[in-house]
Length: 312
Image 1: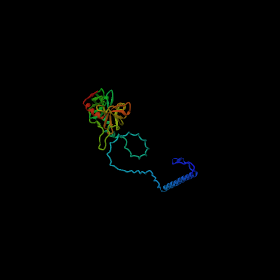
Image 2 (image 1 turned 90 degrees about the horizontal axis):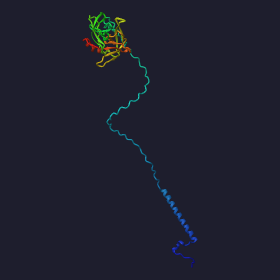
Image 3 (image 1 turned 45 degrees about the horizontal axis):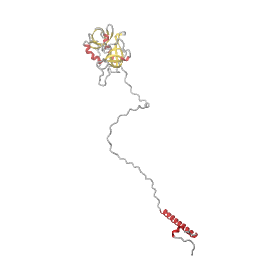
Image 4 (image 1 turned 60 degrees about the horizontal axis):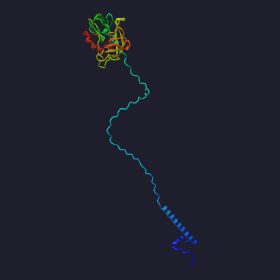
């Protein structure tokens, strides 16, 4: 017969254990845990040995490929506006000196106009004594003289010295104060050396002449009473400008040649000895602007003057 308390199954949780029994039960539990742990470790090692390494995914490599496609050329577009002009560039360095050129033509030579004693250009020009004034004139026809109006102003008869003939009486036929031109008549004997009127540049068959052109050579011929009434003076120069070239206005030449009082009414001749103008004025401002009525103005005025015009 055991002495002690008996416990039903309902009171197992409170049933006391003996020391030996409790010790055995604890070791059994620990042993089981170790075995379980060992099996787990072996399983893990087995899995680790059998596992394949995971693939390493590197970023994709992209390759740039250029493909050239040539299309047909399109139509040209409209032209754009012109751009602004750029600033001038710097001057370049001075180039080497060029080779020496050929010799040029000789300078202007008027001597041919005065070599012939019978056909000397000076003989185209006459001396006029109008009483209160003196001047010059040019033989433009048989018994016909062209001069400046201010030389014979207020006179109807004047004395004229004709080269190779001497003193003759001349009658004032017509005059034009605006143009400063006048025509005189006298009794001719055929010995007079008549001037040829220029019509401007002419074609010679090889080149154009420069008669009356700006820059062309000229010679002014007229008498200076205090020097001589039988030998005219000559002065060489060139045409410097044209004045009043508009229609309806008086056409004159500016020329660079020394002139003085007494040469008014004298002739201005080109390199060929043709009459390009009648000297009417000495410039008091500049030597290159002495004036002569131009040949085209003379041609226009002559019909009226020969008809007896008196234009104040």
